[in-house]
Length: 324
Image (cartoon, rainbow, N blue to C red; front, side, top):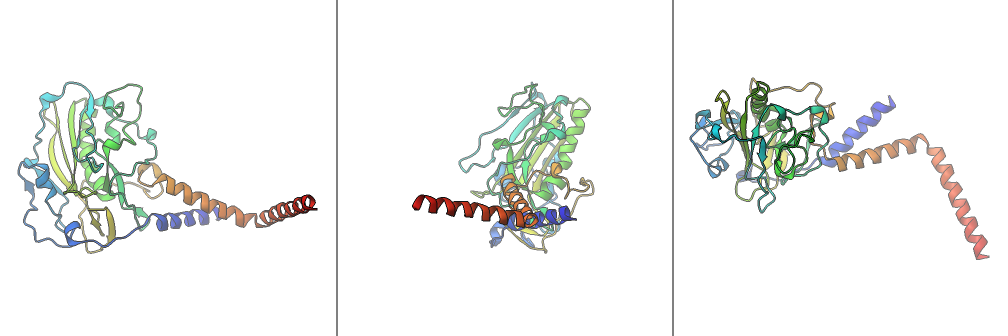
């Protein structure tokens, strides 16, 4: 019972410490309703600036196909197993995207995943109903990058997937990451399991100098052509409105985002830290330390009091002995 109360206190403490809110301009938000005609079921072969100009239309699919869902990548470009990590831009954003040349040996063991500590641009965590609304989104997924070092080369000694690589992370909503992007990462993973070679490219899309991505452009092709997709995913969260210039957010229950029928589900996700790596460890450590200290102070109040009085007594005795 005491343990349960302690954990409940920790949860409340985390929510208070990590929550934040900001006023948003209509230009920088996932709007409640949009009159924009640029949101369609399919986009023509388009570039980054075209994607950045798109606004999410409330209560419609947050996934749009690009170029009739056909990748612009060339299967013949697959030469050897590696990842091309691009440098951060002048605002420290991962705006150029990364391209991975993958094979079966890149499927990572999730048990080796560690806690994330990187805070990409636009990182302002908030908890809604005890669930974090923001993730550290990977361009090239952890599960697809076993053996890839931070310089992009394949090194057998590297047993885990990509984790705290600044060049591979961006601020992504939990919904976009866990319900949308994973659909396509799963397709790549299944192709690799079938021993296919895959080129996989992921590019966070930023508008102007905004610090939080408006969406993410994903495309992949296998060398045999059996896997081939090209999609744009809006970086949105049901019930939350974002100021993309800063990444700050506020609750707006009028924002609806349908969940795709093929979206994955996570059992007991609130109780499993390994499944989500978005909580900032420094803050967690600080809150835990504070709450545990309070817990034991209450439990051993008399002992603390006696010890304090004992130290004060000897301190006064030492003072008067030397003074006189």
